[in-house]
Image 1 (cartoon, one colour):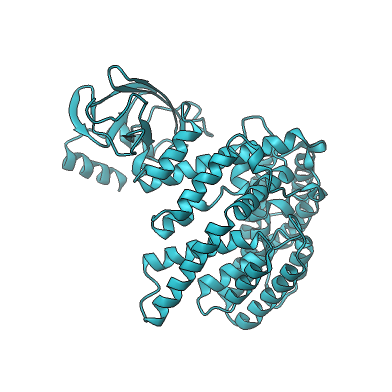
Image 2 (cartoon, helix red, strand yellow):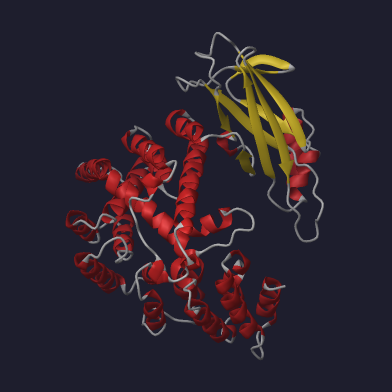
Amino acid sequence: TTNDFVKAMEDANDIDLTQFRTWYTQAGTPHVTLSTTYSPETKTYQLHVQQNTPPTPGQPEKLPQHIPLAVALLDPDSGIELPIGLRGDSTPKTTRILELRKKVHFFSLEIDAAKISSNKPPVASLLRGFSAPVKLTNRTSLNSDLTFVLAHDTDPFVKWDAAQQLSLRVLMQAVEAISSNTTGGALDNEKVVVDSSLLMRTASGAGYLEAIRKVLTSDLHPALKAELLILPTERSLVDQLPHGTLASVGILHSARRSTIQAISQNLKKELASLYAELHREELTKRSQQESIYSSQGKGRRALKNLCLNYLVETKEDEFLHACYSQTQSDNMTDRLSAVATLANVDERGGISELGNTLSERALEEFYSHFANETLVVDKWLSLHATSRREGTLERVKKLGSHPGFDVKIPNKVYALLGAFAFSNQLHFHDPTGAGYMFVADKIIELDGINPHVAARLGTAYSAWRKYDVQRQALMHASVERLLQTRGISKGLYEILGKTIA
C-alpha cells in the first residue's frame, strides 16, 4: 500500500513524512509562486515562496503540502552551477532541496563570493528534475533568464520548461497583437490569417528566434532538441489564458500558425541543414546494419521529422517532395509523420497546388498499403480527423461510412470522432456550430450502442465556459439538446448535467 511505501521511505532515510501523506488524501495540483531578490554585497539570493492548492469538489479548504523544491543557481556569465549554502546548513551544494511545508516560506541562499564572476544576479534553475508535481510561477523571471536557462542549464526538465514558458510568452504576445487589430473576435475560420512577420513585431520575437537558432545548432541529445522545439498546443493555450479571458479559436490558431511560419522561414537554413544531416546519419546507420531502435535513433527520427514539418510550412516544392518521398519509407515512424505533415498542408499562409496534390495522394496510398492493419488504419482515421485543412468536417462525416471505420468498435470511435472532438480545435469549434452538432448527433447514436463511449465523448463540451460567448451559446445548446433526448443513458446524463451545472 502507499502507507507501506511511505513508511519504508521514512525508515530508510530517518525522516518524518507524516505531512507527505497528504498527497494521497488531498485532490488537486498545488500552485507554487515565488519571487526573488539578490544582494550583490552579501552574495545572498533570497526566495519568497508561497503554495496554494485550489479548492476541488468536496475539499473547499486545502492543507499545505510537503513539497521538495530542487533549486540551483547559475553563474550569469558562464552558466556554471554555483555552490550554494543555506542558512542553517552552510555546506556548499550545487543543487539544494528546499522543503516547503507551510503556505509561505522565505529562503536565503548564500554564494561563495570567489565563485561568482560578477555582481549581476545569478539565474535560478527551479524545480530541477521535476522534483514535485506542481505548477510553478516565478514572478521575477525575465525572458532573458529563460533564454539563458535554455542555453546553459544542464537539467533537461528545467531546459524544457524554459522553452515552454518562452514559447508561451511569445504566443500570448502574438495573440494580443492579433486581438488588438481584429474586430468581431476573429470568430470565423475564414478570418484566420497566417502572417509570418507577426512574430518579429512582438516584444520577444527576435530573442525567441535566436534562442531557437541556438537549440538547432547545439550538440544536445536529438530527443531533447525535439522536445524544446515543440510549441504549446492550441488547447494548452486556452488553459493558459489570463483568468476571465475567453478564448477565440481563430486568434489562437492564427498566433500559433504565424509563429510556426516565422520559425520555418527565418530559420530555414538551419532547419534544412539539420534535416539533411539527420537523414544522412539515418541512412548510414541502416547501411551499417546498426540498430535504429536505440534512444539515439528514436530521438534522431523525432528531431528529423520535426524539422521536416517546419520546412513543409514554407510550401517550397523541394521540401514538399522530400516529405512525400518519406511517405514511402519502410520505417513506420518516418512514414506516419510524413503523411501527417502533408495531411495538414492547407491554403493559409500561401496556396500550394503541389501540396494539395501530394496530400491527397499520400493519404490514399497510406490507406491502400495498410488497409488490413487495424491499428494503422486507426492512425489514418485520426490523421483525417485532426487535419486543419478546409473541409475536414465533411471528410470526417464521409469516413463514418468508410470500410475502415466501425461505430461499434470503441477504438475506431476514439480514432475518428474522439480525435476530431478533442484534438481539432479549429474545426470542432467551427463558428457555425457545425462541429458541435455533428458530435452531438454521433453521441446520440453511440449511446444506443455503447453508453460508456458516448459518455466519454460527451466530455468534449466540458470546457465550454472558456470560449467566446458565441461558441458558449452554441455548445450549451448542443448539451441541452442531448439532455432532452429521450432515453439517454444515466452516465451520459450525469456528465452532461455536471458540464452545464
